[in-house]
Image 1 (tube, rainbow, N blue to C red):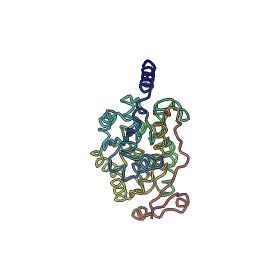
Image 2 (cartoon, helix red, strand yellow; image 1 turned 90 degrees about the vertical axis):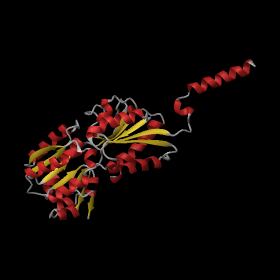
Image 3 (tube, helix red, strand yellow; image 1 turned 60 degrees about the horizontal axis):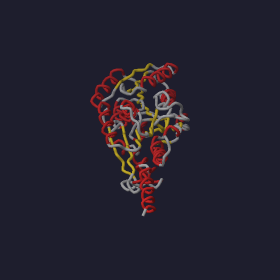
Image 4 (spheres, rainbow, N blue to C red; image 1 turned 30 degrees about the vertical axis):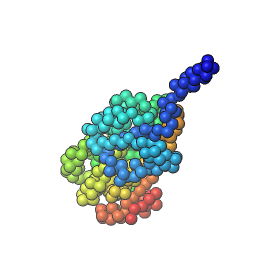
Length: 327
């Protein structure tokens, strides 16, 4: 009897020592997906599908092996409220789009592991001690946006040699945009352009921004990196065609939606790769020990159909550099 009681106590102690997820091995893991734009734009751009594809490739079946807790913020003003709602659902790890969505999680002092799909600069943003060894509860992908956007200026100059005025769409709620504005301003000065910054952080401000741009009559528009703008790509592209402006963004989703040009990372690959980092974290890896993956190649995508609508013949010098041309 004493021996059986002893074995029973040992067994009970071993179960109590197991971590929560090991005790419930059959229960699906809880993964947060926090996107700083509308649900529709996450689908239209293929970013949501890329993440889900990445999870599927790793053997995860949605609803069975993991539950995706989705939250979206159509307007910058709603982002903190949506972040609180997400954290109250207690996911084990969160995939965040970056930008103002990331800032909201930081403001709330998030403690759980976070995978950042698009980081402008993880050290500047205070989410990593260094890209190689973050040392905190964040990991993900560095998009090097401080370098990407200034490089778009000379590309615009090649596309439209007579350009003199550049407008830049910037979100005042995104802390990184002020720094990116300065790097773009330096590039504009070096290329002999005058720069106008138009600040928009909510959908209701978009019409006023368009009116301001129209008033100053720039020949080009640059849209700074922010998933809030992504949901308005078609409106922005149509506006630029109407007023005969070339335009650019950092991801190929913009020319695919009718914009003129993009130069930057393949963000779908970032979302697909985020699944790999989520998998490592769910298996016990610490995000602070998973390096931020760096931009290795920026791709140039040109929509030649939009160029025709602008009455623009894309120079061969630009076409030969393009990684993808939309006809």
